[in-house]
Image (cartoon, rainbow, N blue to C red; front, side, top):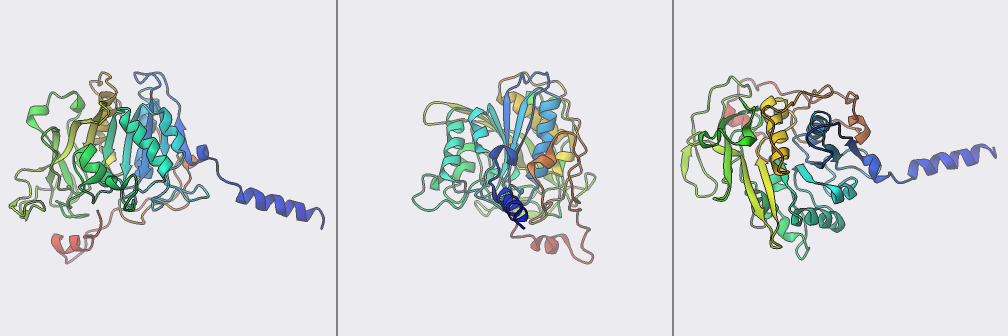
Length: 368
């Protein structure tokens, strides 16, 4: 009895002991390569588009194929379990202190003051940012009077509008019904960011977006009639949310990838690459992966490869996007090199029989 009691207490204390910050993130050491060990920090934190699956895959490619040191931070519960719905969580935020560049896919985060201060310091230092999908509305929920109130997406566009060049407006294509085919802007065919990219496709829909005049549009998104690459372009008309003027949904197509130079008040400048594509399933497309890899090179002022190697390092079978569709019980260690991610990925939904595209889209009208 006397032996059992201390043993039980020890087990209980171990169960209650705090999780070390480093255990809630995953790092990939740099192999030799053009990246020369520069540190890329990936910020995975969205409830819908499976950043917790897509960003580790990209980090592995950049570390093992290109020579960058990569660290992926997640939204986690207090016990270290990955939970994309933990909007106030950023695991191992100290990794931001040594970041040379950021790749982010965030949605409606409201981090603690000290974590926001770290991110803001990185921004004001002029570090480059590659921003995917819902990063246009990365932050929300900071109360009135907060130092970060102006970062809320619904505060004149917040961080997205001010830094990336656009905030959340609407689903321009029908969500989970109409996919996106990338159309390279003719004037940008020689842009180094597009080297080695012959086609871009994603099964996410096109977002309505109007990058500012100081942005360079690289790719526009053709709305397709279905979720497959061979689907025909959609041909209906739709009113813009900004001025209510009606236009053909592909006349012209919306911008889905652009660059801009974000000038900070302290005189520094961030190189910004933004794409409103980038779900875990979008990143199955070789062109999408190469755009992100090229963006890291460009952001850091390195020569962009003629055709960057974007071959998967480990098996990659991503979940389809959707709220609460994340694999439950995962930890950062599940994404270490050489491991197969546990759990069953959320499957792509079958077309709803007997319902038209517009009616199916209404089911998802609150997702963004």
